[in-house]
Length: 207
Image (cartoon, rainbow, N blue to C red; front, side, top):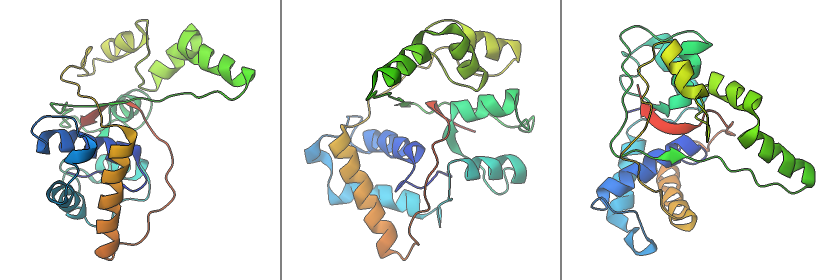
């Protein structure tokens, strides 16, 4: 399994959240659940990948360009897959899109500080043109059928409804977990993480 850098990347954090749920007896982590055994197991799963990529887009591009010999299994955003198949260099015909069970949603939140910012948040959730544009790049909207219509038009093997979704741990718990994983990178001589760029969104998928 190839992921992004858990020290900087939201998608890798979502991978850690899903794994922690399974390692914790299919229960969402609470502060008392973050122990040495769990963090050591998670750290090994990330460290086994070697030096992490420098951005969220890099492993997806490598998967697309270099094929399964380089990256047999990739943890990626569903939106990256849809966007590539609709707008970019399409993936090979033998690529299979998988949905982990359980999976998690990467929720993107707008926190406005001004009236203009509040208006942008409203438009992103209510304006049909912006919702259609978001769907065209692989994002699921809060309402409407833009995303469903897009994947049907292109015949993509994307689930209309994603089920078996579990909650991620509370922020403080997840931050503690990621800090422990980051410390494992440092103690194993991995170089500091590169600045991360925000990419993708939606439910998590594997290709």
